[in-house]
Amino acid sequence: MLWAVLKGEPGRCAGDIPMTKNVAPQGIPSQSSYFGSKLEVRAPIDGSLRSNYMAGECAHTKKEMNPWWRVDLKSKMVIQSVAITNRLECCRERINGAELRVGDSKENGGIGNPRCGVVNRMNYGETLSFDCKGMEGQYVTITLPNREYLTLCEMQVFAYPAETQGNSSTSPINYTRSAQLGGGHSLHQGQILKEVWKLTKISVPN
Image (tube, rainbow, N blue to C red; front, side):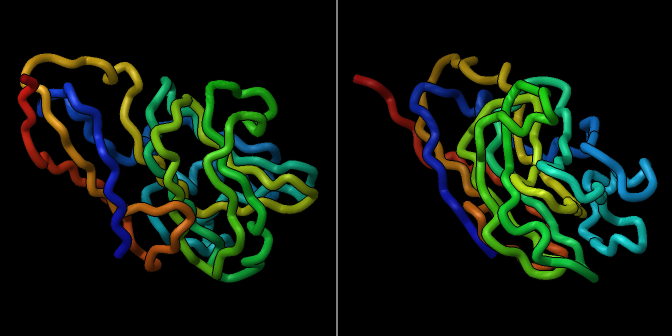
């Protein structure tokens, strides 16, 4: 189990601390091309880490330059982490070099948006988590910057609406957030990410 602790901002109330959850299943998926059925585009946000493409559990593009898969989160979100799951039964190396992009542009599938992370290598059926450090955007894209097939079996996007930021009130506090996430760290197969908020102390200004 992997844990990262991120420090929050002074001057926020306990009731103002935003809760993160996997928002990808409520999003709208799309991809650059379809190797098989167009129905497979929703496989990466079905909430399952099953990852056998032959069983219909992954999305798969044609072999092309800069293939991409994207989820539209419907509004701007503050994205803390993104986890992706690789194909189980074949071709684990195809995803090597894939880039995670976060931003508000949907042009060319969002492949020009700022980069959250890069996949160095992944094993069969492996889930890899990336810390996006609060990047903001409506679109999360995975793309390969070369000519290749792109196969993606699951994407989890842990985020909260950007509009919830800056709503401070009384009783300033310092807080930390503990989350099962990491900057490109592998998680055990079958592990669904969860995030937990913890209030650590109250600070009263002089």
